[in-house]
Image (tube, helix red, strand yellow):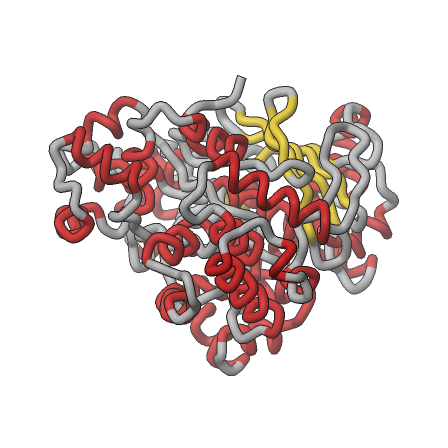
Length: 502
């Protein structure tokens, strides 16, 4: 077997395996993009492994775990392969340790909004501990990692909008125009005006007030269950499928937005309309998270394909992703509303909450009308107004109260096991509800639903055990990717969630 044919499933430090990195660069293997970066000692530039230029001599290569580490070492981004735009490392979404949680928060803009002290407080560590852990694994501290992200945000705004450069600087999170200019020159070896001149034709094609960009991913990607699930469960007013794209409203730190996501053969088209451009970084991060775009589908599918009963499903439609959410609290509320009812009924219940308690928004391009209500907005709702069984009302109000007062925290930085334990203590929360929240809201790639009716039916048809206990034992071989196995099992059913809408 070609040693670079399969990306590593869970490397401790891919960039330290020089032989593997050299093979990936020489074969221009795009599946390693984001796992590590290649710095060229002679030209002082850094590239993604799949850079189309002639690979440098081995003795002139150095490998780094992050773009920030390359920049700190004095290398600038390659103008040809644009390594700053690669998919993120799949490690950060597949791990639950402090470094992975820190990277998810940095990607979500926490350092820009709350500083390193805010990042450390969220993780329950000191700022010094977080700095030490990130430097040890990524070669850069939280400020450098956030700076690299600001540079990429600035590049997007420079190349896709006609905003004055001063507005771009502050929207990207820079404290001054001078710092913005210096950073752009240092990272991209071009002044901001030169970057804009290179992309001038692209700016003219943008719709007024919108930002259009491409969201890269590692191939393969099967959009059927990903967009099918989002469209089939869409809450009226908050989400819709229109013109071949999934659209939804976004509640963001500085304002709100509307995103339109269109599946493409080698990227996801993303059209963002934001009330405050400072939310661009977090909006992109949440869209990538929702679509699971940083996953390593080759590693996932190889593990699942090792089971001969599951292999035919993987071979038939490889590259399935786990459809997630842009807001964990929102999904938890919707999971309770969907307990023991049909998809249509769950949408109806959620739409009533949205109309009664959601913040109205204007959507000139479609039919979106509201933001999904926050836990604080739902905390005061009258249980008697809910068209739900009494026990379900108690479940919902208890959940909302915990989310609103902070005693229950759900988000990208949440400790998965701790969240499971907290949720199981709430009335009306059983294993199915807890695991579906762990899978789709918290992003645990190993979340599993052995009691789900669709999963059990699929297991039975494949010759797998169908009782929850026996299926769980059999599924141990699929770890740590059981959430992806669920997607393949669900795909055996002729349900709208498995089909890309017309």
